[in-house]
Amino acid sequence: MMNYIKSEFYRITHTKEIYGATGILVCLSVLFHIVLHFWGGQYAVTSFSYSFLVTEPMVFPTVGAGVAFSLYEGHRENGILKNATASGISRTKIFSGECMVSILTATIMMFVVVGAWIAGAQLLLGEKKSGVIFQMEEVLWEMTAAYLISVASVVSIILLLWLLEQKLTAIVVWAAIWYILPIVLEYLGLRFEAAFDIVNWMPYHFFDSMVVGDHAVTVWDTAKGWYRCLVSGAAGTFLFVCAGICLLREKDL
Image (cartoon, rainbow, N blue to C red; front, side, top):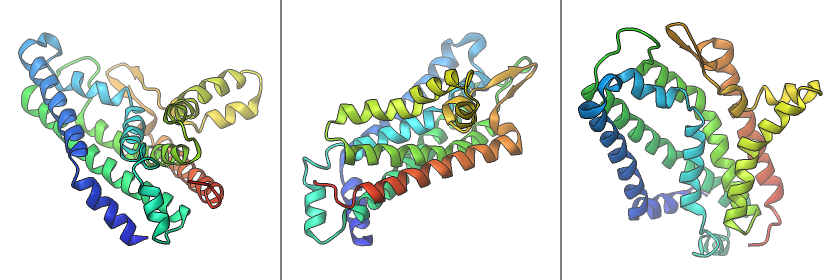
C-alpha cells in the first residue's frame, strides 16, 4: 500500500494540474487584496477580507472535495484502478490510498492558499478600528474546527466516485449529503426530535456565524462548539471509511 501511495504522490507532483490550480487560487486571492487596496475604500481593511472565510466555513470541506474530485474523477478511465489491482493491491487499500493522497494534497493547498490570503490581507490592507471586527486568529481557529470535517468531505467524494460510475451523479449525491440533507432534517426537526438531534451534529447546520455587537460569534468560539466540530468531523470520517471498506470489497471496477 505504501508503494501505491508513493507512486500516486509521484504522479500528482509531476503533473501540471495541481500546481496550476494552486497557482490560480493564490493569484486570485492576491488579486482580490490588490483590488481592495487600491479601490476598496472603506472595505480595504483586514476585517472585511477575513469575513469572507469566517462567515463561510463550508468553503473548506467544499474545496477539499473539489481537490479530491479533480485528482480521481478519472481513475476508471486512465487505468489507475486496474493497474493497481493488477499489481495485487486490494480495492480497500486503493480506496484508503486515494483518501490519504487527497487529504494530504488538499491540506498542503489549504495552507498555501490561506497563507497567501492572510499575507495579502496583512500586507495590503489596514486595520478596522470599530464595528464588527474579524481577525486572523478567527481564521486560524476556523481552520482547526473545519479540518476534520473537510477530511470527511474528501473521503465521502472518493467513496462516491467508487460507488457511482457517473461523475455528475457523484457530485449531486455529495451535495445532497452535505447541503440538502441538513436542510431537510432541519425542517423535519420541527416535528420530530430525533431529526433535530441528528441535524445538530451536521456541519452545514451548526456552521452558521452570528454577529453580536462588536464581535463575530461562531460555533468554534467556545470549547464545547469547537469539540462539536472535531467530533462531527471524526465521526463523519469514520462512517465514510467504514462504508468504503464494507462496500468496496466486492466492487467491480
